[in-house]
Amino acid sequence: MSPIKAIKRSFQAAGCLIVLGVAAIGGISSYVERNPETKERLEISERVASDRIDHDAGFFTKVGALISAWWESDDLVEEVRTEKAEAEQDKAARRKEAEARRFNDSSYNSEDDYYAGND
Image (cartoon, helix red, strand yellow):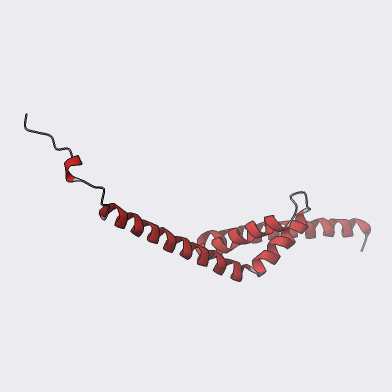
């Protein structure tokens, strides 16, 4: 094989890899957008990966950290769901306490109510 053919083939191979890469990225992004659980998992993984690495790190370091966080994301998703459930329970308990205080307030006096007269 002549050197010119080798160079030509290498450009063709690089072009094919680029086309396949763009198609793969499009397919993955479409899959993530259509599945809310996967989207939540990716967001959590991204947050954890950004906490782990420096912002000046290289591209492959960032991708490696994201893949590592994705690999461990089952536990992270469970933690986030547990935190959300506890927050909802706390919010409901506070709402219930506020409602109980509002209706059981001994400082309330019906004389304080204002009713417009028929003047």
